[in-house]
Length: 190
Image 1: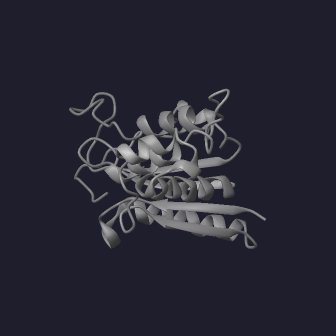
Image 2 (image 1 turned 180 degrees about the vertical axis):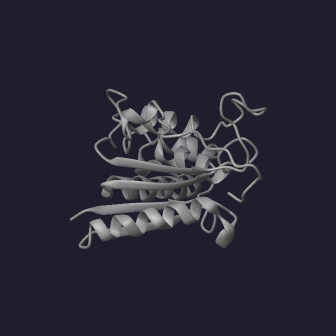
Image 3 (image 1 turned 60 degrees about the horizontal axis):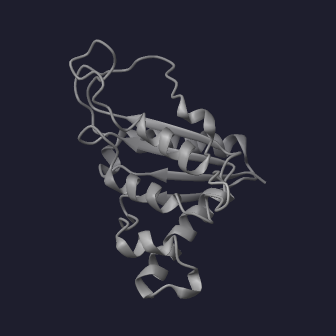
């Protein structure tokens, strides 16, 4: 049975373009996989905590030696990695805020790059390959070649590299593709 992990990260609620896009894609996925299951994660409503010293240390200390703060951070990493590991397809709604992804997306990725969970300790190879990743990015304004803000979009290039290099979801994402350039005439809510 197919399993979809649907992740949203926009703080714009009902007015969010990235949420509308991901909801539409999730509906299409359900139509194509009527027996499939879906896990939904909203990084704006339930943000993963940013990694602090306890989270950084937890990755390099055996779990049976964790203090309370390390155990709590490691448990969140186990939960988030488990969601990705259970999915055949990961669908991600990604807005652009202040020229980059929301900080909750960075916190999610920091938890996802976990030695022993998503990375093989001996080889350093990512363990989460073999799944489809769909990133639906939305931004207000133009950042394409020839626009005044060319090169200012640090969300779209960053996420594929972080996922591919840190977890092997999938390696092909390290080369982002565009089907057509898109830049609206007026800003739209992400």
